[in-house]
Amino acid sequence: MTRDHDQDRGLAPATILARAGRDVPPPEGNGGPDSGPESPEPEPLVEPVTLASVYRFRGLDQLNEVWDGRQVGHVYRRFSHPNQDSLERLVRKLEGAEEALACSSGMGAIVAALTAHLRHGDAVLGQEGLYGGTQALLAEQLERFGVTARYVPEPTPAAFRQALDEARAEGLRVKVLIVETVANPSLRVAEVPGLVRLAAANGLVLMIDNTFATPLGCRPMRLGPCLVVHSTTKFMNGHSDVIGGVVAGPRNLVRPVREVAMALGLTMAPLDAWLTLRGMKTLHLRFARQQENAAGIARWLSERPEVSRVLYPGLPSHPSYRTARDVLEGPGAMVSFELAGGEPAVARFLSRLRLVAFSPSLGESETTVTYPALTSHRSLAADEKARAGATPGLIRLSAGTEHLDDILADLEQAMG
Image 1 (tube, one colour):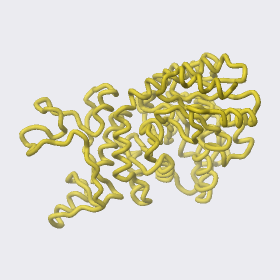
Image 2: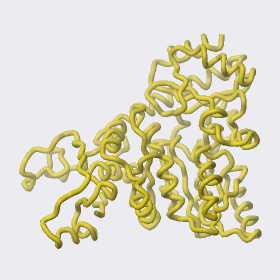
Image 3: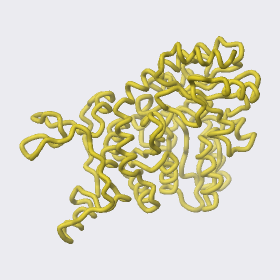
Image 4: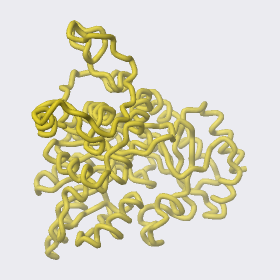
């Protein structure tokens, strides 16, 4: 059941993505993963969906070889399957990770990662303003099992160092640090290099939610050992037709996560893995256009009298502008903005949109907006929403791939 770990062949991310589901051919090959004299027949260009729930064996010897990882193969779909393997190989290559795990959802990936590295009596330090689902998991579920969570005002090494010292002074046993590369919805950018060093120096697991940045915008493992999680539902798939998540990192950190996911049934189904792979074939094309549109939208919003504030890491006015230039390979495809009239202005604006969809997700090929105070951060108390940036007038926009002029025209008529 173990995976064959591909070596990095030095290909550009765009090439890796365009060939999603296919390995690099050997020098004498003609483009297929198994091409060559040993391949008895042509291989399909697109990987097929393998729906088998269980596999048959020639006898006990083969069962033991596969089960113990001495022979490549699969036993039971909850443990692994070919489509899951292909997606995990792709994520490993993109993130530069030793191992990756595909899960049934982004929250499934976070649940598996946290429960694999926390025990009763342990503590977590997370940045203020984490995704509402992550905060709810910590407060409403893991707390029941004796895990304590503390929140840090800034995603900086200095702030986390101070919080770590204070937690230890209280007698807390901190094991995990959690940050988001780009926070939702404030778009605050974490100082990843310093946080990686802080975690390593203190023997802690640093978990980074890289969903907003994607592997094209940031690859934290280049900076040091950490666990990277993504909701593949968002930019990676990009087509609003599948739920999923991935965890990537050093083998010694991901293997325990895999064991938890297998035990709890959190692994990804074959069709979901196949759909995610299909979507990722165009991630580099979509994300480039989405970032271009986001920059144009942010500049346009900055000049609108109805808008009191624009949050976009590519604007010099954003608090994380300098950090974004150091950490990210592009300012991203998300823009948050605040309407001066608060929630009534938001309600009016959303009701007037025609082209741009009001939808509680992000990363789709089309432009969408959402209202974090009543969607992603709905479960938080008012003071927690305020600290996260989910204020009454804040709208979060996910730039799509449409023509920029059409997006701006719809935003303008909705504000008019």
